[in-house]
Image 1: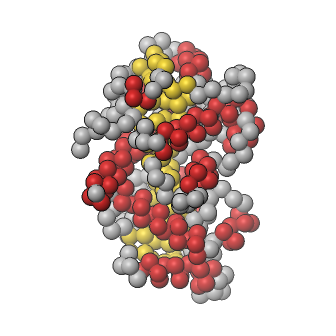
Image 2: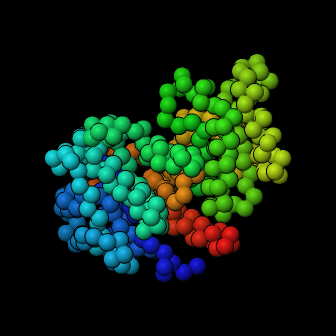
Image 3: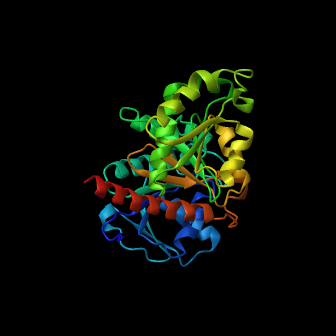
Length: 341
């Protein structure tokens, strides 16, 4: 389908002390399939380009999103996001400026995505401690979006690569608190968001496996009752509507079965249960998606890389995959919306 009338993709700069600016510059140095704009601090981006020796890279300050033209290689449109902090940062060191400017960039992108001025958000990595130093005490992008949408829906974190796709019931909370967050409502939200995400990824009738919380999915109550009392009733409800939902299944084998093609998605109960299998297969191909949001948001599946920041060795492949995947989801959403109309 034609993307002529589709607004640009918004890419947030991430933490300036990390590798976000570097991978963004590297992304724009190659052809892009659709126009995009960076939300961040132009001075920081210019500092990064100079440090990396990219003298051919130019930055163009954009005041109105409608002024963004089709991608011109080595010219990067920037929407300036200011910080209340002093603007000083050191590569590899969390700071109030880094936390504030990366949060402001994300917040502005969310506002524009909500207004339909950008077609999707692709986020570079942030540092949660820096966010706190900058006055924004959130556990990450997903939690901001969940707060943003809480009056109408709840979002779920999705991690995927070319072999696995997993949706989380709970995410950035202590392991000791996970059981009390496994409720019929939270499992239902994750399954609903798994279906929504699946449709946007091209799965019309997805096969969704649900991992148990406990070893061996509880072993009929021997190792815990969450499977019997919470997870099984939710799965039964979804099956009544002819959806392909299976489980609860033992967590130690369900990802292997999904990787072999038996399932399209795995709903996991907590953060490390979901992320270890995906990240074990490699960070360069992983993508983070926020499911359940009214607009598309994807992200790299790695952190700020403080240890390699400013050295010119960061790999931008995850960002490129996140950008292309966001566009594919935008295309699919447009088709689905047209069908509803």
